[in-house]
Image (cartoon, each protein chain N blue to C red):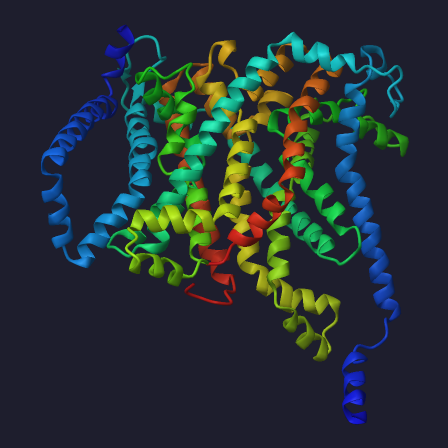
Length: 341
Length: 294
């Protein structure tokens, strides 16, 4: 167990191990006590006030989540904190490195590129996807005979497995034999190097993201159907046209859902991984080196665990700042029909 | 009599007859619906069509929609080139365990959040919501270290154990929303009859929540079926690969064999689409019901 010795360097991990042992002991002990004094324990529990009993039961119910949070969120966060000041390639023991990883952060040209790619992609694909999903939801909210068929067709792309999706789009965007270039050339357009040209590849990723927008479309559709018809009738009586009804009834009533989809969209846009790994593997010229892919490479291909942890914290910080901005400046404009519920 | 008839008539004919604008809008909607349906479905058609072409026909310009000759053998080659049967078994194992975990533990926690009143509840629910908005990718590296310290790398444990602890923030949130729509009186009646809190959860809430449970079960299954980043991080030996990792490594090894890659992709996509058609009601209704109220 050479590996065990290495890992013990990280207190958080070894504490976790020790805690696990202790928990097992405690569980054994309680079992013995419970067997011996089971009756006594029940009596004690019944003696507690209703409020105390409720508290105990409440924590029993949410205990799986609390434990999960400690094991799979807090412990990793602490380990990540420790990793940031170490250099470690998973093989030789981790070495304390002080601010080394943070200094590297400042001089990392690839990181700058990766951040640029991620942010540009997010800034384009999120609003575009949101508008498109909203538009499609309005289309399939219409009452036609075969509308269910259209709903299904619009939704299906979003459930294609990510890996299959990546292969499919790599083929569609193929420069020589792909369908997309075929259509463009059929209309007299040029042959575009979608996946070879750094200027075009971002658009390719936006297109394939927007194609799979069905999930938020369904959420929008649910929201649209939840708007009481009476508002539209009232607006119509007041002489509001189609455009005005959209602007003054639909949009305000939908604003919590638009906001929800916006937040989810932002978070997803920062997690592009599978398509970047499989379609372009970060290229051409790092034009699709999304941040998660860069973290993955730093950790598992260059074996720089410490630096990868710093990058993870950076991603976390960016998301925090973005969430703050989104909640502060957009969340405050959301209209809630039933505040407090 | 005559008066009320007149009145009813008035109510019915309140709407003015369709204007030219309405008719135009109707046909515009139809046109857009069909147009985007074509846009959305063409990649699928192209996927299936290409997967049935020969290696020569696939590299042909201009491309043809109908494969000639017809090559269903592509599927046999693709799915036996790599042990996809093993991958399938592994994926079913992981997905099955995940679904079990999520259905039971997320509803269990959600019951506490939805129906119990106790100090600290809102704090912990705040943490649920916070983890909802944190992508898993942030913890990829430290989680890997913890799991490798536990000796879990190249086993299914990192993929199947964590869901047993709460089953994911999103599912807790959805179940909590659903529980809150069930009238508390039903639970109270059970309590008066001597039912414990566990009894209320198990005998009252779970049976009433079947649609929501099926919904989160389906989404969990889909996630396990589609997930690449988890399996690619933890699974090392090909015998342990899931479908997603298997397909990814298949792609990297059969560089220009687009026909085979697309056949394998189609084969991996089909079960998901079949599941959707079987459980469409739950897909759509699940979002609507558990929805975004509150």
